[in-house]
Every structure is written in C-alpha cells, then in structure tokens.
Amino acid sequence: MTLRHLFQTLLIHTPLIIAIDKTANPDLSARLKLTTTTYDRLHVLDNDEAWTYDFTGAQPIDAFKPGSVKNANAATFPALTGLDMTLAQLNLGPCAMLPPHLHPRATNLVMGITGNTTSYMWNENGVRRVTVNLTPGVMTVFPKGTFFSCRLALSNACMGCDNAFLVSALNSDDTGTLNVLNGLWEMPPDMIRAAFGDADLNIDEMRPHIPGVSYGAAVGSAECLAKCNMNPDGTKKEKK
Ligand SMILES: *[C@@H]1O[C@H](CO)[C@@H](O)[C@H](O)[C@H]1NC(C)=O
Image 1: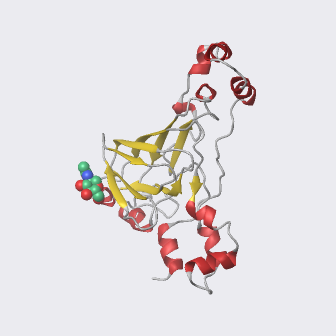
Image 2 (image 1 turned 90 degrees about the horizontal axis):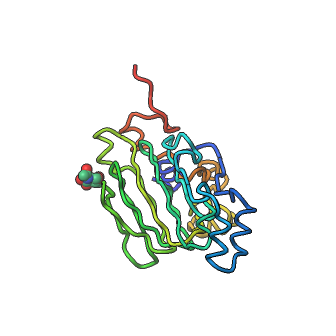
Image 3 (image 1 turned 90 degrees about the vertical axis):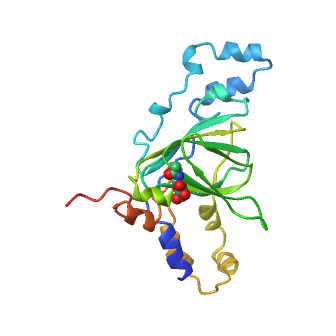
C-alpha cells in the first residue's frame, strides 16, 4: 500500500469549517482579567447566567454529524477565566473519529459515557503506543502534549454503529488544540517530502484530502464506514 492510499484510507475529505473557540464575551473576559481579588471577580460575575454554561445550546447543534468537541473554557464560558480547567463533551457519530491531535497546554482525562471508543496515544519517541477501550465508566489520561486519536471500536461496528458520548476534563482554561496532519502540511513541501523519505511524494494531491479541523471530529475510516453501511461523507446509506 502506498502512503497516498494509506492516507486516503484513513482520511476522507470533508468540507473545511474552521471552528476554533471564539471568545464569547471579550468585554467580560477583559474585566475578569483585570480583577485583583476573588472578591472583585465575584462582583464582575454578578448574575446567575454568568455562572451557567449549556452544552446543548453550543455549536454544532447537530453534534453527532459526524461528530464534535464542545469546550467549556475561558473563551466560551468566561467564568472559567483563570481557573485552569476546561470541560468538554466529545460527541462521536457512527465511525466518527477525533483525528490525531494534541493539546499543548493541558493534560486530558477522558471518560466513556456511552458507546465503545478506542483511544490511541503515543507519548514520545521510543515508547509504545497505548490503546484503551473507553466503554461506559472507563477513563484514560492523555498527559500534556501527548499525541492521540480516538474512534468507535471496530468490533462495535458489527453491533449497531451507534453514537459514542464521552466527557473530557483538562487542566487549563486555554488548552489549545493542534491537529497533527493539518500542522504537518503547513511545513514547506520539500521538507514534508524529506520527512516522509520520498522525494516523489505528491504533497499537493494529498493536501485536499486532509479534513479541516472543523468541530474537532472527522468522518472515520473507510473500513468502519463500510462496516456501518455509510457513505464516504459519513451519512447513512439509504435503505433499498
Ligand atoms: C470494545 O471494543 C474492543 C475493541 O474492538 C473490544 O475488544 C471490546 O470487547 C469492546 N468492549 C465491549 C464492552 O464491547
């Protein structure tokens, strides 16, 4: 199998939506940053709405098509400013995956609530890959800067291909997210070819097949989509 085919098996083209968490209320965030004491801070957060975050109302509303990560962090929930925490909902539709990524500023705990999601983590050069099946009530940890990815357990593709729902807690209110392939393709093409050890690698041909960062999830592998009777764009095939 050539590298190009490997990538095409792993990654299916989806429309480019850049959904980085935008600061919801810059004025409130600025006022919170200027407070000297907690007392001052509590007077800035002077209404119950400022203390409430509703994941169900957060974009995308259609959270499982194909999937999404919804973050409550300093940008989306200003009350978290300076509190060193993020809580995220991980919503994975059938086959959807979180593409290989890392958080440069936070360690990440992830716990399965529904479904069976397999997570793959690689901590650093020279160590082994860690694989954990996140069934309901099972948790793993991705230490800060770790490179990881998760998707529906392939065995489950034979048993329903349902949505998976997970909860993720991170020890920063500003974790950052770096998708590994999107980042790699920002490097000069000759360096990418050299890094792959293939001077003939067609970088331009591969680039459009790398999904945009979207809402954090991507359509899953061709193998899973076939098992779950889904189209390459992650939608269900019409019943004949
Ligand atoms: C979850 O998926 C893994 C990997 O396919 C499988 O080995 C395991 O038995 C599954 N667990 C459950 C509870 O279905």
